[in-house]
Length: 75
Ligand SMILES: [Zn+2]
Ligand SMILES: [Zn+2]
Image (cartoon, rainbow, N blue to C red; front, side, top):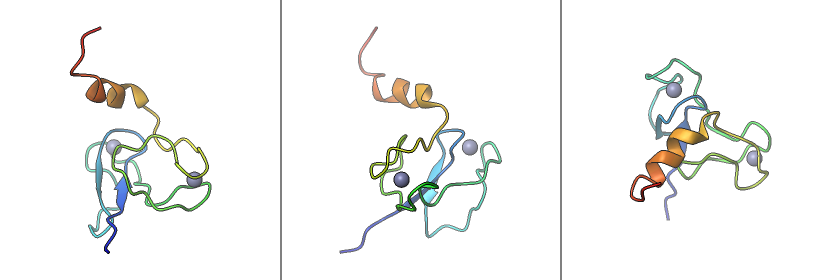
């Protein structure tokens, strides 16, 4: 079973697979996170906001993601 892991931009919604070479976000230039900086867990969910293992915050702007997830329902 092959697990797919992701690198994420902590500053915007960008992500890519760890097999890709990017070290920096092509959208905003922030260095991509490949592991949780607090516990070193791999990132297996591209829209992650908090580390599932230790709860560390991995992304600054949760609001945009929240909008994506809740875009189906109206406020
Ligand atoms: Zn970015
Ligand atoms: Zn962690």
